[in-house]
Length: 292
Image (cartoon, rainbow, N blue to C red; front, side, top):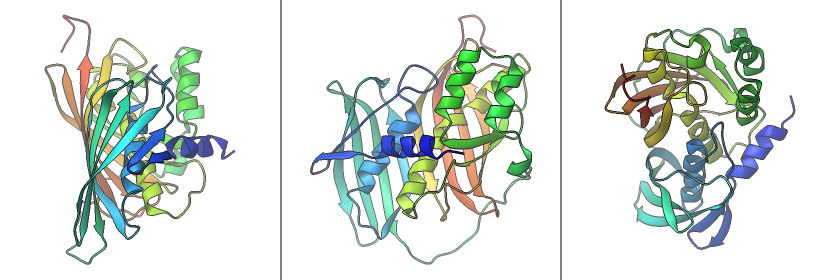
């Protein structure tokens, strides 16, 4: 497969430095006509990482999505150097478009050190090589060809394979609010640890809220009648990983209520190491009188 889609994504996530602690990134629309939240989170993490010593690795981020991003305009990222300690470095990043903040992120970086080690075990999952690709699976659902094309274009840089059908695969059939996807970059990445963390951050926003829809038999954000948007996003990076090798994203939704839904996930390497924990809350709205 051509590495052109992956290189296009890497170019998108690469920022131009326009002043000390100020960076500018380009933007593009996702499946829906607005800036994809994972893009803004990943770019903000790039901005933070550019101001941190190389021996300090990202270990957590906490972010709020404040306004819908304009896919036709660049985004300016300003970095506040909150703290530079002996072991930890903290940065705060605000993303601005048209003079208004659209996203705010706090990220923490740590110098490597030894410590206690335990983790939750990796859940059972089929080998990703046995699962159909998006190109093989999506056309079978009878979706509008234009929607299929948008999905494939938005995910061309990432090989993302659902273990079971996505929400739009069995519309109208409530299921357990749990889903699994395997993913990896569609090509080889450099060894820079920040790059792998940034790619995982980008992908983490693609499917996490899907488990909310599964519980209610709803089709999806670009399919059916659900209106959704990310509100906040948190990630903890526990162990080293490569985003160009298979990662299992195990996701579930413990609650939805009041027009909001919560998704939580764990990302494992193929050999069973817990690499990342993720939690996100989002707006989940349906036509008035249809909530259930």
